[in-house]
Length: 310
Image 1 (cartoon, one colour):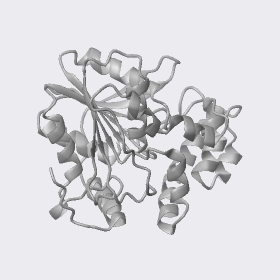
Image 2 (cartoon, rainbow, N blue to C red):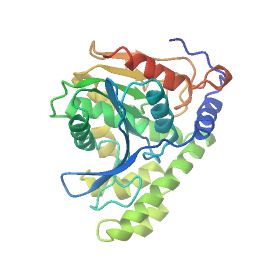
Image 3 (cartoon, one colour):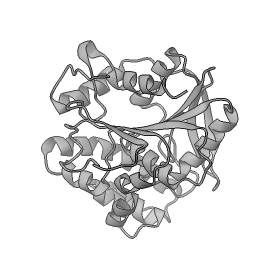
Image 4 (cartoon, rainbow, N blue to C red):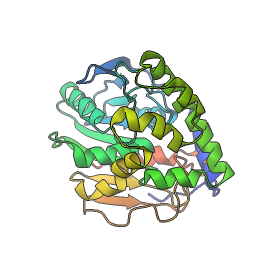
């Protein structure tokens, strides 16, 4: 399935794709809160439709189960009659957490909770897991780390994965457009961090969160101490998904644009097991992939690829 871009500028692809997806109507379904083993909850939108496959969609930085990429994919998935859709909000992404923890690029254990729940709800369906941006990093790590029986997993798709968290954070600081992206995403992260700090002032310092100006600042202040990392660099080193590819045992498709403005040159992995395949259009930006006449090529690619998995 060849991508024919409507725009060849990576920033126009990134922003244009986001704007076009924002025009779609919300997805209708059941609003749920899935309990985690440690007493927290994961808000989700569940659309129980008959079909051979159930898809779990994992959002990126600043997103939740209402994120436009997930809603757009969910609408296309249901329209094609593939089956159930679950749009996931990671911990703290939609509402303040019940435990002093927040989502981050390594929180792959949350997918064990969601995968088990979907298997119970749709025991006759194969499961597909789709991750966008930071969610893609989480999905790849989960595929390598999970101790679950993944026999029912039909496959997974990683879209616009950062692959090397530290390299991407540093890359975004090198240009004014990169800093613009960072500023927008960090604003949401700070809001969520402050909401958690209000509930857990002993674990999180609100004043320090307000002063964080970069991803590394935020990860040094919030992600590392709360989740047991020595510092931001330790978190990036231990959670970047590029190192986990060799441990992936399930079918995985990695969709990355070669002009992704979030990725510095040389970030994309070059080697992987046979069950991992790479799709790398020359254009597409970050989660853009806007085709001719505003066609949402990314969703068509995912749905078409997954249609061959049952």
